Amino acid sequence: MSRGGSGYDRHITIFSPEGRLFQVEYAFKAVRTAGVTSIAVRGKDSVVFVTQKKVQDKLIDPTSVTRLFKITKYIGMLVTGLQADTRAIVQQARQQAADFRFKFGYEVPVDYLARVLADKAQVYTQHAYMRPLGVISMLIGIDEERGPQLFKVDPAGYFVGYKATSVGVKETEAHNFLEKKLKSNPALSYDEAVTTAIAALQGVLSEEFKASDLEVGVVRSGPDGSDRAFRVLSNEEVDHFLTVISERD
Image (tube, rainbow, N blue to C red):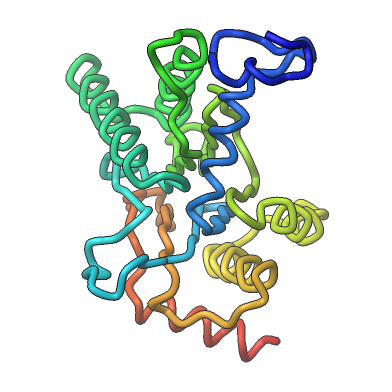
């Protein structure tokens, strides 16, 4: 192999002279081939994520296409990247959550599930007979002790908690938008978290969305700390928030 870099991208287990694993970097690029941007925001009593709903073929039933998944009653997952790999990681997450509940008798914590998925992803970077999954996952839930939780897991096996984050084509622009918006570390209400996430997506893409163009998933604790269930907002609810944003602007 030459030292110019050619050849080092053929094997996932070999570092280039610059200390890079090209196959892992290519996995991050594969995430962007989906052509969508996803944004998540954590509030004081809720967590919200939003993504574009893109249907590749007009003959496809739109109701059968989604990037939002319920892992347990209390944990939601947004997966950005290759659709086939999405199915694989969602299945892994559900299996891990079910195994945890069977073994310990209570629901799996969000941070534990993120750690397990990250551990599996990291193993995929060590063996030549595997390849990293071309997806980045966001996990949201409300922990009984720690409150609202937002984690992101990438193809390299890295995971960390966030106040707000983004994935996809306009990831950098979205990060800059969110940093300015959350600079003063505000304690966002549920409505503010939803409108911030949707407004950020509209801002970085410079588009006016219809409710059918978006998918919004939320977890929210009630006044007494109950009702922490994950759910996907209906088109009517999304349309309400779009109207609030347009009237505010």
